[in-house]
Image (cartoon, rainbow, N blue to C red):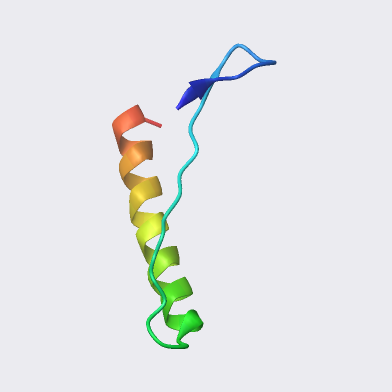
Length: 49
């Protein structure tokens, strides 16, 4: 989280990193998307949005 440089608000940047096992990039992307959805929901709930 950091303050915006141009607007009076705080910005949050979320990132999920999932290692790719073998050549299964699709599975890693699916896992990352599900994890990001959970993370986003948790942050949204914590902020009361």
